[in-house]
Image (cartoon, rainbow, N blue to C red; front, side):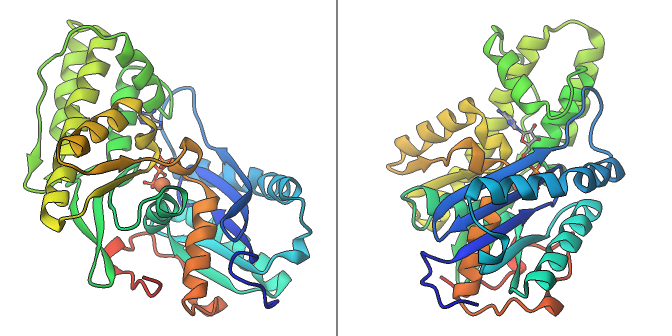
Length: 334
Ligand code: ATP
Ligand code: FE2
């Protein structure tokens, strides 16, 4: 690779762990482009084979748009990073084949990146946080993560489904399309009455399965307005998340929270985290929405961090791992 300084290196990032196919070009910390195409439906959720078809259909268009917007030539790229874990196998395979083919063609190093860790690293890059507790609230994942003894440790997590998947399933039961989170937020603003719902915090962990069953029964009964249900769901579920985040702050002694994942776009969750932090002399930070949802800029940045710490980007190390755990990844750059 050309001998450029870290802040001059041109990194191409590719994201395809789930519903989003994203391509980004970074010049060091500068985001030159961050393009994405999200699989969406009017009704019903994500069918893995359909998501894969979506990525096949749009990968070239997203890629070309990212290169064009960054105003670079393909041959200027120094380094490629792609999300190889964790995620839906169907999506990961499209991303892996795309990235590996490109790395072969360009003869550039290819760095595999853990998607969950990338959510945290982009927060550290985009905000003044240095050593935060991450509340990672996305579709498939709900984890409270912090750096301890060379690794990102999971202090608490969901025992069943991710909070975003929970919101999407609840939304599906209400007849909202996918993704339902933003529609639930909108409806919640019009809610007036708080309905009492199951609140499941077990130690440092949370769970949503029982709540979902309870909500489906409530929807079927027809006794509650959609707006009140959305309001009440947000109040209960976000309180659960903020409670375990506060415990992780107390346990680690850290003073910063960073939000990550698509659910963190929710203004009410951001507010609750701010209030909790304010009450205990800590501070809550949140990157712009574009970097909270699945995006390729975070993959490019996390790839550059790994590369700077000595990852050679050898093609033989770029297999996919749909089930890789956040705390199984060695972090060599911190
Ligand atoms: P991961 O692979 O990291 O688990 P993901 O693939 O599900 O993430 P994200 O883009 O991080 O993708 O998150 C998508 C989720 O965020 C969806 O479940 C969506 O409903 C939810 N979401 C997006 N915006 C909002 C919002 N304003 N309020 C609540 N939830 C939201
Ligand atoms: Fe994500």
